[in-house]
Length: 208
Image (tube, rainbow, N blue to C red; front, side, top):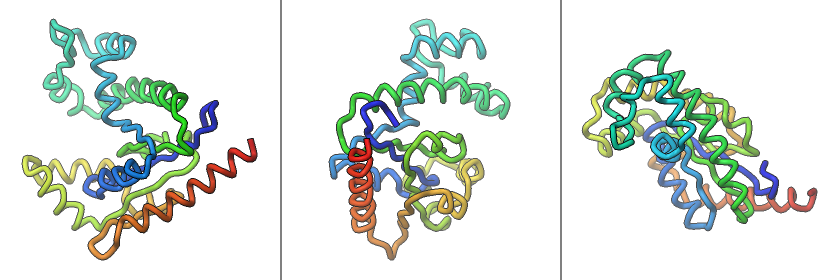
């Protein structure tokens, strides 16, 4: 929790689960959203301290002469190596956590959402008051991914899925579960959770 007592809520879900769509519904309801994965990419190109650490660990060629992140180099030499991937994550995650805290301190909504694909896997969910998991059957998720990202191979899709906890585990760990399957309406589920979080936020304000 930040000093201004804004309640922090995580929202996650496996690739193809539809968490982006769910997050947009919360945004329409006026809830600020911090996109941790996108912000991490931004920090890699704009955070001076992080840039220095990346160069120290992975070489000056991590950035071009003009200062732009050399994504092709990192993709080839870093992200294909589990040890190097773990190392770069250990540099990026603290930078994102610091950036997130600064962002939260500026918010005035009853609660905010932190959207991230690997909330449970990285352990960052422990710093949040509540967590929402967007869940969908694996077959539906794979179909969505193929339609959305036709450039991805089946092997690439499976590699991403393998790095994420199974839905069953995430559903057990989450405080709220949104089921995004063909026979479930999203908006009623989001509204129910939204009202529950508003009530919880109000109670926290009273307690403080």
